[in-house]
Length: 186
Image (cartoon, rainbow, N blue to C red; front, side, top):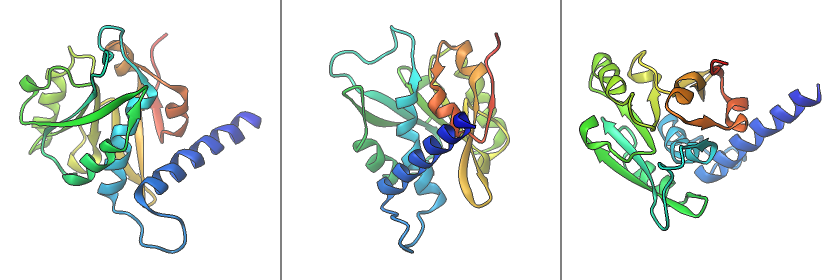
């Protein structure tokens, strides 16, 4: 029972922090849009991921958050990333039209103009140690983190097994607040 209460507190803390980032204080003010919530989560995911030693940013280098294909976020993502620091590194957003230009991305939001294109892009990223993120609004193709809406709230599923295959380790703190997790293979 204590573990469940701890998990619930972590979930509440994560969503409360997201609400503060978006300016929602629970006082009846307008709720942020689904897109705004997703834009605020994207740069924060990097806090809860460990990359292989050779992939971590060195010195003053930033974490690279790439938007590959369509960009549903625009300025909202830039604003959210500008407020984020991960182990002293800033987060920068790069928008690239193709996977060929995604080298060096730590987090890659992937959305093609059609579901098949998203699947193709995810397949092309398989050799890179990048945390892939997709959106359920754009089709069934799933990255390591997949946004969805459950009961009117933005939630996400995590494919821990896929992340582990690329040498990424996702924190139990993030796994605890996911709507569902495909666990890593033992």
